[in-house]
Image (cartoon, rainbow over all chains, first blue to last red):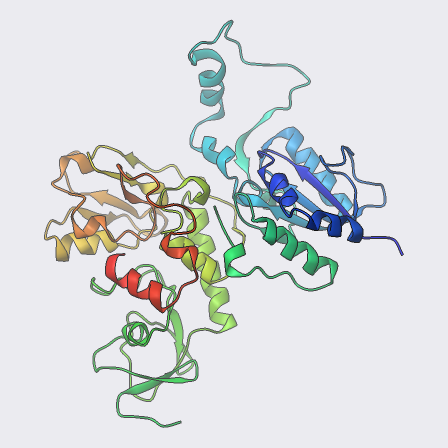
Length: 180
Length: 239
């Protein structure tokens, strides 16, 4: 029997959620017995398999055009998509810039900030364009489950993944339901 | 079920009450938690946040505003009501900027613990990305309106307990905002003090002390454990 597949992906985030997933410690050995990892920074596979994956975990918010493209592609390939962490769920720390017009942000970072040599706003075709604001993932695609926290506790990952793999509806106990 | 002269049924359990008590007061006295935000035991009733909505004899009503009545049947901890409460909290979260990871109030925040209690795990609605006026003019206290839920606790505390009348709510509906009663509209130009009752009652991180930052470590904060009789009493004492 083929194992269920899991993919993970990070948008505008800090990889803290991925670190917390790894923080399930030796249970990672149990997990790889149960599932096959597909696209993930952990496997260095850049795109999900053509046939799709069973569970996708998405970390981070949407701050540029590439994030949106990546999220849409990821959604198409994941049967169950889980928004992981505060950035994916509400925008998190990247969304702090939402109070400030994007032009002012760029001016401060690249033109007027202290200690800048040769001030210029980066403008290269390789660079994805910034969105006007930072958006949570549920504004762009359908999300099946959410795992809150900054980052979500390792036990919350374990609780959610084992529930999904056993075909149960995930439910987080109080200590695992954290927003910080 | 035995019905004494002054008792009502809350989620199938008989609760005694003293005449004049609200359903909320009777429940709190019995150690039963009904989610709430604008209600505070030391302040006059407000009934605006609707989180404490219960069903009394099959009809919706605010537990903080409705007097307990002998023999009535009250439902609170039902999936229907928890779902409605969850939606209210989600709306409060997207209307303001409630970013728990870096908020000083996190762990001691009633908005956050109510969200935990009603099982909220996402925002559901699109965020408003609000950008309201931040007031850092006061020496001891910071007023971050982006975290304000317009519960009027500080308004009532300042008027009734401190006798200072420093805060008010202006505007209607979506445009309602917390305003400060000084010529400049700034908190620094009032006689507000961090020792005032109004400085202690904010259920979110909207009105916080400047000099405390993150006062206690994760794990020992008030709401690191689930709402219980213990935390309800602590709530009543200093929130």
